[in-house]
Amino acid sequence: MRKISIVLFCLFLSFAGAAGAEMSAVPDSAAFARLDTMLMRYSAAIERESIDVKKAESDFLISSVKDSLTTRHIALWLYDHYKDSPVMGEEAVAIHIYDTWFKPGTIAMRSEFDRMDAELFTSFNRSTLLGMKAPEVELFKPCGGKVKIPRDGTYSILYFFDTGCAKCKLESQLMPQVLGQITFPTTLYAVYCGHDRKAWRHFRCSFKIRNKNVRVVHAWDPELKTDYLRLYGVISTPRLYFTDKDGEILGRRLELESLEQIIHYICDYYGQAQKQ
Image 1 (cartoon, rainbow, N blue to C red):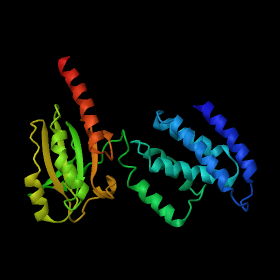
Image 2 (image 1 turned 90 degrees about the vertical axis):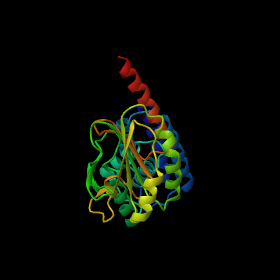
Image 3 (image 1 turned 60 degrees about the horizontal axis):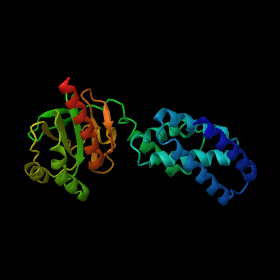
Image 4 (image 1 turned 120 degrees about the vertical axis):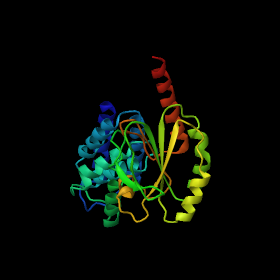
């Protein structure tokens, strides 16, 4: 991968010379467009690399160019790219770029609003990155008792939803079919993010998982006495996470399709372990 970086580095030096090294220089939009194309090709070339490699390569690209306008443009492009990436786990690269370059003030964000947005993004995502242990929070059961989620010992699915959310309604209708494929002990934590007790009761009555391997735990925190919304990045619903028996996050911000893929993988692994 470093060979690709060196080629891009040479192109960046050429670009910086053409664009000018002075802050007062007017950026060449066409040149920046060509730079964006190079960055896109580069990110595609390392897509299958590890998160640590992507962090290191991002730092290398940002630090390689001495022209301040170009450096800032590269850093912002990389941050935006990894922040909004459809590839699960790449949010960690965006958080690394923010913590390393933007938060200390080494490179300035576009505006104060963008800086505040980045602070919010990193705050709502840094606790649940892939490979981390899921934050344990104590929520309330329908009867008023308390329950900690997730708990070690079984695989866990954390489903944050709202009864007034159209996508949540669709996922709740399709989820029983997906969870019906599970062949290993699993706990589904269905966390209601709303405040309507009657609507929540109706959901619990209609949401049925007919799989003896899946235990369903309903919970909520209507008065927000815990920090679960920030810890699990629940800016909007639905939100889906999958953790292993030790609480390690194996899947985050999942769609039902990607949840199903994880379930199939664990089913295969569990089946092989049972045969041994």
